[in-house]
Length: 545
Image (tube, rainbow, N blue to C red):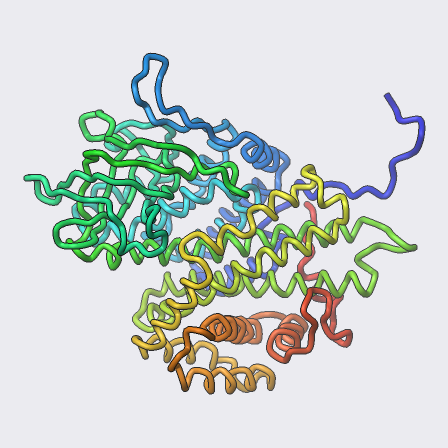
């Protein structure tokens, strides 16, 4: 029935039917910059296909359906047998399946694999972020398993497979598997050395039985998990399969699913082990050292995931402003709104540029790049993930009341935004990790300073910021209380250096003026009016196909 009271006008069409990858200039330029010419065309083609899928109405509907229909736990079957299964909406499986077949768990064994995967992860996460958890864990498990060549030979081809098979079966009967992780326990949280889960050795080489619990176990329907437990030789890393080779299900009691603020489509669980069979990964007593490479890889995914949320929020805000009229003109043409949008766009581009630079360092895999990552990953994880909530909240406000309703998709982004700052170590953990590297690994600081110094002399505000940073770094006694301030400054100097080298002049100028030169207020939309803000906004605009 047609409305009789009024005519609907001045409503913004949905941002749909576009290539999420091609519409993101900061991302496309980063891919071109960091990939070898010989694989660039292939990478563009695969990322373009993924980008068109992410921007499609179908993928957007899947994302909404997965969020609106959270997973459900089934502890027992109808006869009272314990089954410990989690049921997901079909949309979840479609999202996850598309991601796996697009190579988002395959980075370690192909040329430019980390840049290609990071770019794809950034693109596809904009369709729905919750299913990124098992993708991230599966990808990140590879370096930990490589500490045991026999385990790596058995599991790595399945972890990096482009085939998605749901359901619990012996891994040997599947063409691809997913992994989860369980580190924290009730009594300790991040302090994993206080874990009480026991690992009792069996006669078989490297085999143990685990007894205990995990307070947060990611993706409980995965095929395998890396967990920490106390063996006779100390805290050690173990591989726990959900199904044993003979088809019998391992003891893996899912007590409940977490009722989370956001990340609603993803199952985070509490589990108990009671004589649970496990294989040791790495040496006894070196569990943290064994699993730390997995943690580092998932921390990078937190940076990439936050960059994705920011990018989608900014794209939606600019899209809305380009179509919505108020007070005699389009919002995007209003000087104050343009200032807000430009400020948000700067934060998004800086996050994307930094995330892809870290991925490129993984691909290079040199001693110098590994040293750089030792500081750059926790510093980026600290800063980028914290900026995400502020960016998404401000972008939502650009849509006004329209952004506050669920149909806009913005509330889902806002609920998701704090997650990456908490997962894989909260802000204080990251800041202290940087501090430890500064105090114990002088090579890491040298690598970081070489990176930021690559743009020295290009902008007086960066030069001044580097000088101030060196003064702070000269005295690390009692630095814990100021660790957040120090790490924030390090992240900003790094982003400024990258943008000066690779971003358009108007972007780098605005970033240095506001983030390094201090010429801004305490909220978004307070950039100096003399900057070329229109160019910054236009660069960040997503053009529909």
